[in-house]
Image (cartoon, rainbow, N blue to C red):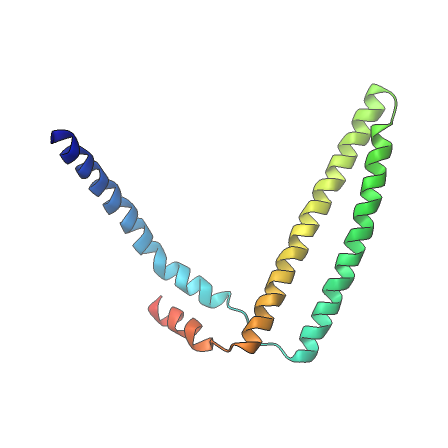
Length: 133
């Protein structure tokens, strides 16, 4: 019985600590959700953004293919230092490519949110989050 009571006390202590942290962070999160809400955009602007994003994706696919080819060439480089230098440059370019791909994915997600927001106008929900925050 003493073990159960002790573990229950420890559980309540953790609950009080983490509940207090969560409750103090809730208004800040609600205000930030209001600040980063999707905004309604005109249909023409949405279409141009979608086409620009599609063009960026096509360019990234071509660039990725070039990176793949240069990585294959750098693997075949003879000599320790030359190979090491080529592999390092290849890894650096691949990291830049991955970062750009993540950015394009985030832009796509934002564009999808804006399209959904244009269809389902729930502006009152974001206003409520601001008031509650």
